[in-house]
Length: 382
Image (cartoon, rainbow, N blue to C red; front, side, top):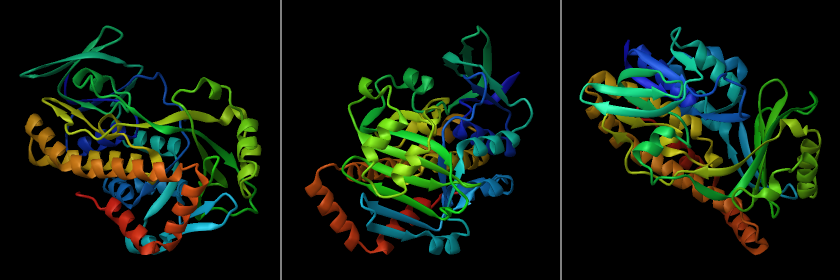
């Protein structure tokens, strides 16, 4: 069977794109290299743009009960003093849903349920592909081949497809590394509506409320790329690093099991000027991976899926549609990647004088300016 689209990657980008394209009547096959969809990752944020996209795909009804609505965000210094605050509740009233948090596994489950049966195939690693006038031939590690009119690369920041199309483009290191975990909190401690980030000399610590009395926390620390000294870092090591930070930062680290820790260096892709390569299209992290500082990784992936399906609805010529998609998405995604990169650099300052200057500027910055910046991120073209 020849498919209209073969999608490389069964993450949020690939699954959402498959759903959107199937709703337009396209025959789609999703190839995921892993043999099972594990509950990888931790929490993630979905802004108004992401929620609007999921609503268009009729997924929000299944997901809503698994999400936590954020009402405010606070940035604190390591003593717990307020640096800056944003009233997300005001944006919730404007957009209906401005910002929610959810465990990545819950979003993944909801997306899989909306695929047509047989769409997703696991354990299918793409090793090569060839283009011709009639379509694309996909070569798999197991020796099999698949035929499609086009290939959509949604295979993440380390995309195999991108490496073949654009071998000189490589991920760039942000200068900081990150530990993450999801933990249960006592019922009497209601953290449900408030997202906080603490910016201090030792690093940055975020507390993100999820559903069912769970929180997702992350700790970002300046470090060399792929530091061997951090390979065996434990929660006890992190506790000693952040023990002088305000409560409940040390307590949250202390109640985390070492086995629940996820560690990785924070990387992105420097903004590209091309996503389309004839019958091949890069989307999601394969095209515009961003640091997680404004919570738009999933949001931009969902925007990609909706805009791609809209473009293909009005233009069935794959190559022309892919070029149109590229023209529509490069400007917005470049803005997101650059903004997130700058915020990360400011948040990771470790010089006390520069920290003091930064905090002083942020305390004087009207919250409406931050809200306007966030609303520009929430704007969608679908």
